Image (cartoon, rainbow, N blue to C red; front, side):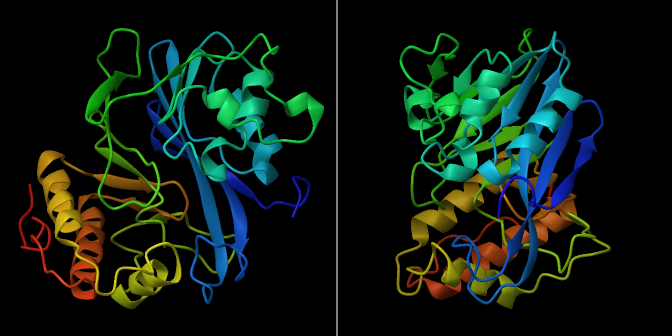
Length: 297
C-alpha cells in the first residue's frame, strides 16, 4: 500500500476545540503484526491533537502511507500561528515516529517529547533524501524526555496538564498519558483491538455500539505481543492497572490504533475485560482493579 491508495479516514472531534483524533485507515488482513492473524476488517491509525490557547500537541505521527493525509489534517486543524509540539508514546515504533521527519520539515515543531534523547535521529529511517534528518538539518527541534510520573503542559499557562507515565502493561519503551481536562487516557498499543468490517466505521466504541467480546480481546492479546501471558506472573501488571484506574477519572481510552473507547461505562467494561483476561491467563491472580471489583467513581 502507498500514500496514494491508503484509505482516508475522518477527523473526529472528541472534545470540540480541545481534543481531536486524526484518523487514517489501514486494512487488517493477516499481514499486520499488531493485530491477531485471523482478524479481518479495517482499523484506524490514530494521532491525537490536543489544543489549548496558542499551542497544540500532536500525540504520535502515524504510518508513512498516511503521510500526505496526516500533514493535510494537521494543516487544517492547527493554524500556522499556533505553536506545535509532538509527543511520541512509543519512540522505538514506526507508527509513532514515521511521519516525524516530514512533519518537522513541513512546518515548525517547537518540542518533541519522547522516551529517548535525539528523537529526530531515531526517526531518521527514510531513504528519500528530502526526508532525512541529518545533523546538518537546521530545523531539528529539541527532545525532552519526561520522567515516569512527570506532568507536561499543553498550554503556555500550564492549565492544561498531561500526566506522562510508564505502564506495566507493555513490552518496549512505552508511555501512557492522561489528559486531566478531558478525562482521556492515551494508551498507546494497549486497548487497541477494536476494528470495524469496512470503511463506514464508526471509529468510536460506545455504549450503544460495542460488539467486542472477551474472546476478541484474548485473541488479540495472544495473537500479538502478549503471546507470553499464559503462565506469566502478572501480579505487577494487575496491580498497576488497579492503581491507574484508582488514580484517574478515565472517561475515554484513546489507543494508538483501533477504535476509541468512548465514555466512562465503556472504559470500565474494557478495563475489566483486559484485567480479568490478564489474570486468567497468568499464573498469579494479582490484584483486582476497581472496575473488576464493581466499583466506579
